[in-house]
Image (cartoon, rainbow, N blue to C red; front, side, top):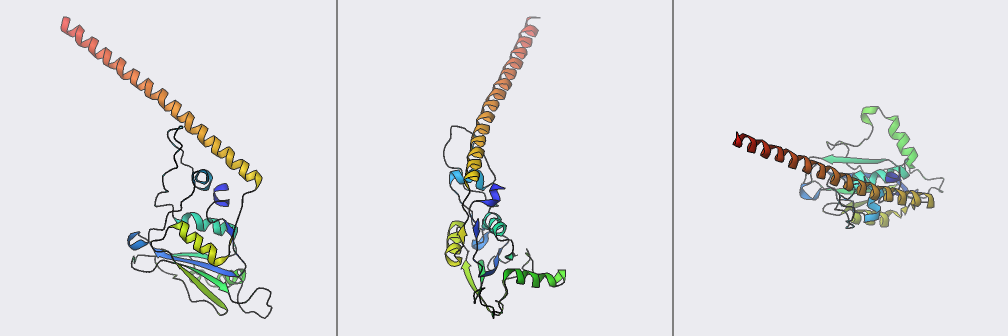
Length: 238
């Protein structure tokens, strides 16, 4: 749970945001690489799927996350976890020349305005759910639901994510939305440290076991070679 609760993208959106829409291509050509989500070495332990170092004495930062771990697969799920009522759709297209953009929809009037006709995120979600299942907006890999025009009383802010690293996307998203990052509690920080210690201890134990088995295999090879040489000498003397 810590991996989804904390890390890049774990933040609370202001109530003025009604929905979020991400458009980009299926393939990485043309800048649609779905920017990698970089983290510090310490955050890497608990903010992503843990990939321990092979050498327990190696304290270098881990390599960048592979291409499959992109902004939309790491940051967006955390954002959805903390903002479950806010609709968030991902629309992908086969056209690598198409724009890659993150669209953020805002209410133009505050929630305290009783006369406002702008739908809240919950009302918007309810409206979508009233449609027949086949007509409900949903994430797509075939460009079925590109970012729509804003509803009455909405405005939309877009972020160009083509050829942009996820750290920069997230920074611009935070600046334009006013989202508040979620900070781990003392208990969660303690659990993160324990996980990091367990990971380092596990890597050390695996290195020891690997050396043990490597030595055992080497001894078996040497013994087999000695038997072969003994057999060859025996045959030569007969």
